[in-house]
Image (cartoon, rainbow, N blue to C red; front, side, top):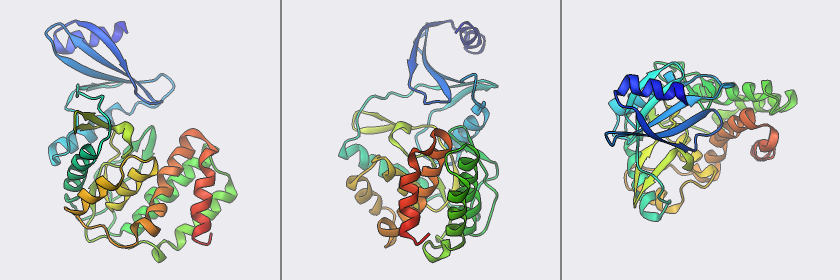
Length: 285
């Protein structure tokens, strides 16, 4: 902590008077820092056994701040091993009005489009690398840069075995039977679960820990249902701004959720195999 104290005093010209540990997941230590002049900061430092992704995270947050209206924390400082952001109030719960507010923010984000799927730079989801090679076609991008890429990482980490990886490869070959190209690639947050959504009162105060790229908006929508982040109020409000094409909930949601399930298999092991197996069986693989 002494190194963090010295860095904060050097950069911000004030000595911290208090530190509060915040939940930061498995890859980083996150602290709220109170300065003598009343300012509050959030400092994020990678754990010693984890990859330092602070530079990529800072770049993603700056991209969202400069190119969208999505409420994200302002990056105040970044150096290797340290990311300092503004503190956003949190602690509220996900009510119907909060879901509707979230829907307005997410729909506005998805209304931002690009000519290609991917992004000008590679990103991360958690500690895992996320390639964003620019491609014209969504199906090929999802196949190569999301589904097969993450399946390979899960295999290498021991979350799935070689036979299971081969099943995912077979399914990747027939993706065009089930998913379609969007009208245009949408800007995605990329990691929409409730741990990355800050609530204050009856509104969203911020979205954190993005894994951005341009792709099919249904990726974000699917992810938001995987762990029950959003429900009917979110989707009702979202539909008032953007359409959701028929077949999403019945077919495509599960297909797109193969990717975050493989993310979790790569990070946390084989506890997600049953879910992945069920989706593959549903589609004849």
